[in-house]
View 1 (cartoon, rainbow, N blue to C red):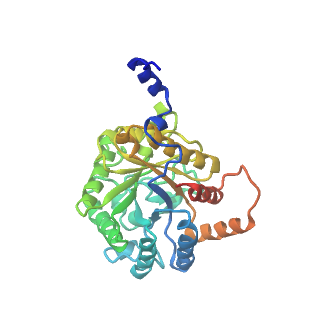
View 2: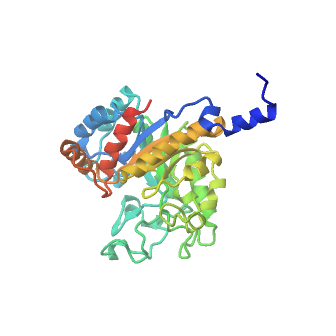
View 3: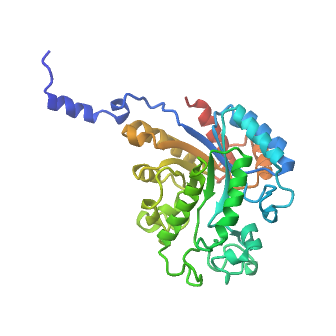
Length: 370
């Protein structure tokens, strides 16, 4: 049998599926299988620990992002703690269980944006109103969501000379409490930034403001060997992509993607469509996980896309596609009630958006994966 000419052989190799070129099959594991959820209140802690052990562990979850915010008995700034917050001893119970089962726990406090919710001003700006980027906007005047600006979350001014003294104190404390090697700073849906009424940052470029704040947080964490995680929406051009102002940025922050450290972990959330922006982040040099919510078919597509990207990319890029993180935005207690009720009832398939139903689908998918 005559040998194929080298050029023809090369062409045939190029036409093979990428997974074959890489010596990989379609059954590709994901390094990150995560859940992002609100930290439980003390009265739901036992049930939450049972949920971790009986539901997350058998499905091989290995990342738990807990939105703590002000649900912790802070010693550094007790004025910021919610009523009846988690104690250090209760946090250590979560940490011990997750450590036993190889689950990385990452605490989250929303920084920069999400300092209010509809008509409620949250702890940081409630206790330190001088940090408010837009003090003229009074949340208590909003009788319903969306508010007069069609938005719902205030920001702190990143250039206020005292804000980071407070912010970094609680960040360090919560990371120490969770024995965490990473911290999630939120940073999503930042709509109020570089506003005209702010005497400090009104004439600053919004991408520069955002990038400088991300970098400052990153560098503070790096001093103690901790990684920064953030949501990715403010780094996507919402107009060029057509994704819009919620899952991407239409207020000029997106160029910050080229001004922040590359070892930041990006949580790339898309809830109505499996947009392929994870590839954008990976090609920019970031580790990235796709995050879904309440449409089971979208969540499954996001998982499949991450596995496909890992199998069909150059090795340097493939390792940046880290996996999938499911998001739950209800309170932990309400979530647990809904989860176990739905699991027990096993209702018929439905097209209605449902984050818990979607999570059950994700759990089954994870169980089938290597």
